[in-house]
Image (cartoon, rainbow, N blue to C red; front, top):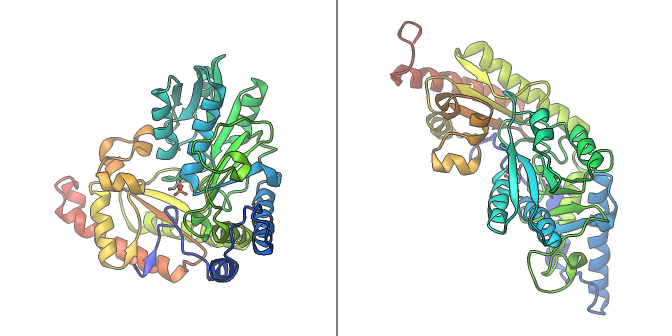
Length: 387
Ligand SMILES: Cc1ncc(COP(=O)(O)O)c(C=O)c1O
């Protein structure tokens, strides 16, 4: 494991307290929580599952029966989009943004094969949805708009309240992929007029493999998997009780002082980079972005090269989104924000958690200064006189 981990928008360390909370449900109280087995251990497990559901509901101002446990954010987004479109059983139209996570974009591409149309709305240079374009994209047959809370690459926070109001005025459903914002950027499903919202535990120091979909009571979905009748007949399979307990504990442990801490680290790294390294650009907004993400372009060099050199010094960060760094393609998020290809290639994402320290940020800054200077000496693109 890298000594310094600055990739907390991909996943986070499990908090040891969360693990302690989960342990009894892995080792001693392992009965299935469906509650229909008729023995005490299962009834106790069911009670614990319902407590976890209530805690998660409270964190977004929902009712417990509006929370459906899933295997994570990807499944929650799939259930929201496929489930709603299939429940309607007629050709329909959805609206989303060009910078959503693949679990939204690829689900919509799959829905297209079922006759469901969708429109991608553009974003401005900071990654904010273009509201005029959004309004123009709405059609009489639009059933749902899906706009994320926080962008996974640049940390842009979308104006969900405004979008929710526009949807409510037109009787259109509103879904948010809140996976990279939940617990770090507050949101309230009622004030935001949300019909659906996807959550995950592993981005906030909970376990991997558990998430949830918020579904407002009156919203009708079709299941996307078939089996037993758990989770309000929307998600079959034996419930992941240790995961649910861990997820609830994880969100309870997200405190305002943690957010202040990660916001401070984010600013420290950005101001340090800006002060000591020439030819850098911030992608997104430092003051209006999420507290845990910055995305920086280092001109004339590849993000991949920086990533590898940081890794050699024990520092984990990311270029673009995790999936795209594998494909070595320029980030579609940065391209949608109007960045030229070369800049989209030279970008790095640093993302923070409460377990990071100021000392780690200082070490990362020192490492970056050396790496960027060395790579620029080798790059044929670096302007001669200033190299
Ligand atoms: C914005 C966003 N949505 C969805 C997901 C997928 O979540 P999960 O890993 O829980 O399936 C991620 C994770 O990378 C994400 O950042």
